[in-house]
Image 1 (tube, rainbow, N blue to C red):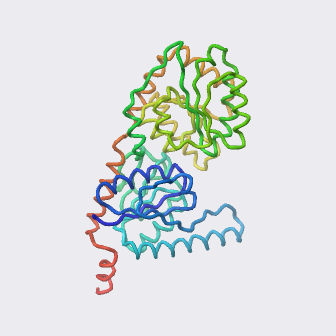
Image 2 (tube, rainbow, N blue to C red):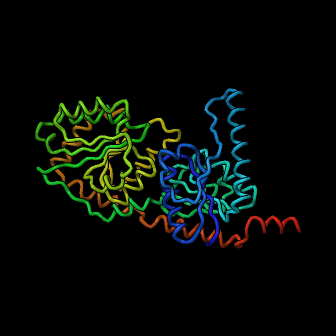
Image 3 (cartoon, rainbow, N blue to C red):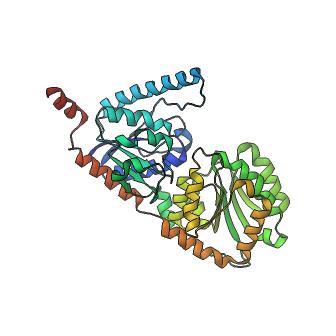
Length: 379
């Protein structure tokens, strides 16, 4: 076995999906992978390809009160101590962070132990957690050619792309099926926990504005929050629209591969998967993102002609109905969008990132943390 790599990631899909891809690839190359994350792994990280998953204490300061700051600080210190113990036990050669506040304690502990750390930024805006340790990183891997707030590490940037799961790579081998002018029109709608409510409001209303003939063509797959499921299902039943609804789809890549149009938010993983699979999209960035990273991500696809991007405040049912009507009546517009998405995609991102991890491990001299510490003590 080549050694151990510690991966640290926040417990959301945007952080865990690329971490999942890297972990699987490193495992194929003979590395032992350990994952440090938070309790949200139960939802997004089922069957994560690591030898062990470690839940590490972490926190973000959600308020300015002294009590909130003290509570968050206490959790972060606890997480750093847990990470120290984990590092001493597993002796990782490299610590790779994928962002999110749960990645901070392991990265900080790794840096203090003089283990090389690598930061991967999925978005076109450097995340706040990643900013904390970007100056200490041995390398910074990016998904986009330009990333806001990343000038501090200009000499150490390598654009690898955003790793996608094996299921995404498999879905990318399915060619785009252009809808016929009068045939079925397959739409996939998903938005994550923060976006599903918006799409549950706007999409049924928009489809209700289409003609009966247009509605009869639609084959819809849509993510909904549990509390919205009944009303959304009732709306589509009344419209006689064939709809497959679910609160969470574990097979999103396969569904994306089967779709002829995707309507979604524009998180980093979504944008990467759209590009690798090569599917046209209508993107509505989450408007309350702290750094507006979703708007920046969506802009990359829009600039290449791969997506229609709409501001949520100005995107009501009428506008969505107009977009759907136009695409259904002139489906040839979708072909260049799908092709443009593929041009942006980096299906080899996971190999590039794994190569970088291995290179940093070699540059560190291949010593274990124990031998490095012994040498330092002897000096």
